[in-house]
Figure 1 (cartoon, rainbow, N blue to C red):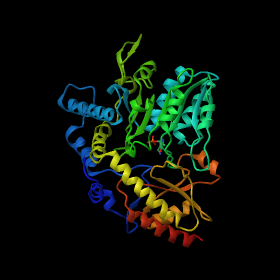
Figure 2 (figure 1 turned 90 degrees about the horizontal axis):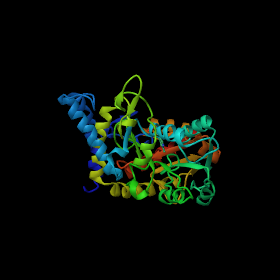
Figure 3 (figure 1 turned 180 degrees about the vertical axis):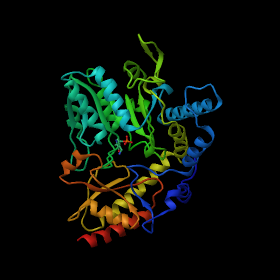
Figure 4 (figure 1 turned 90 degrees about the vertical axis):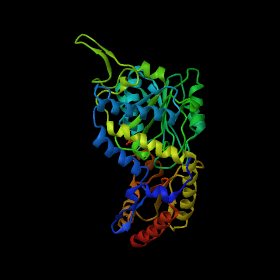
Length: 409
Ligand code: PMP
């Protein structure tokens, strides 16, 4: 493992050297997507200039090297999340598609009228809407784990939501809008200790780039995340599922690659993981995600988390000094997301003014409208930190925020 060298890390990300609106870019929208290191960018160029070919099909050289590289990523992902089997790693378009696969294939097969699905009050829309669509279709019922003012899930209420009709639990590891880190292992244990063990889906979209994941230690049934939030390319993500569950589910889409044999009378489906990977995947993204995982592994998630935790504490203390700032999401366990509102201002106006100073933050509901409703606000300003951010950038945010507030009030 390399020492944590922030200047070297920053030098690896070409976009961090550019200016925006005549000011050095300060990028604090990492929860939406992270920037990419040179290693990933170069791999994409290398793929198209030296390897481009379809995977899992051709006998020719280029198809074989592309297929091998694509499968290297799958094995890398298996190690990264410590899955028992390589074929438990389904390569998808991203978190949203992965959740939709489970809602469609597991949901339509194992969830019926009157059955119950438990989600939490702090879900991203992509972990709400697919379940609502299933409920509309099947007549099943959505139950929601409430949270307190700090943005922590009520664990006692969670336990009381289970009934003999509960068929699935789905919740986020880290909230993209609040930064809360949920007690995932404990919550999985609660679901598994019901009279009939209830499977659990964990949305790790905001965890995978900050916290080391071990699906076997967690004993999680499904785990989903996106490549673009972990310094990798867009258009690729993961659905991890336990082998027996994935085997029991029908395919998601029909097409090439997911079949064993097709006649007009009958089609037999391919084995895992290909059963869930119909059609040509995003080959370049799949292959180049490998570089992003290598990049993270070389630095090590323990070092990354330690650095980001320090930065989070620094940024939280610095922003707390700014008059009028009110934090939304003050859980005891937090990842590097800081959401806040400023009394008397609209988050959008703050975001626009910060942008003029080269500072990229997110404003709005962050695809989590129920959270905003809970707090009775239209949205927040969100600064989400990554391993390449610095205390100097936090200082620039504080100065910029004070200027913005001065202009608005
Ligand atoms: N879940 C969470 C917690 C997220 O933060 C996001 C992205 N903001 C998603 C799901 C959806 O991810 P994607 O758009 O990459 O599918």
